[in-house]
Amino acid sequence: MGLRPGGQEPVAEVETRGPKNGLLYEIARARPVRPMTLAKEYALDEAMAVRQTCGT
Image 1 (cartoon, rainbow, N blue to C red):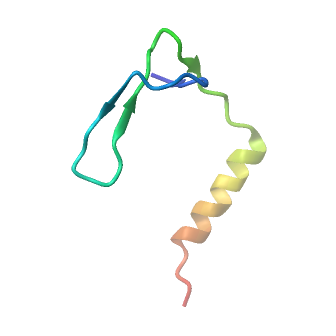
Image 2: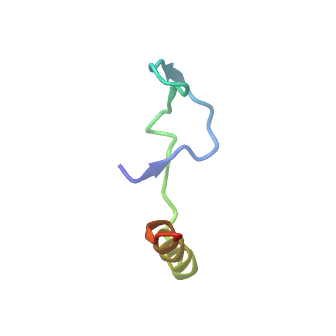
Image 3: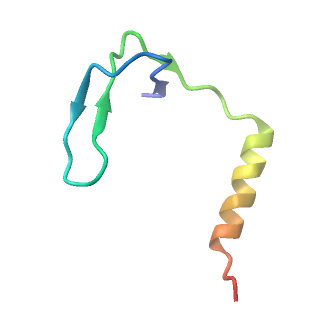
């Protein structure tokens, strides 16, 4: 939905089989995701390139 919690506390928690549970937030109090800056996009591209390159 393109939203982030925006500092609010979770209203519920969903149990999963794994080590982490899912947190649920109110949609009405959520805020839009901040747009990615060019610097962040460049850093992410660099990190993905390193991650996909064989070290040997």
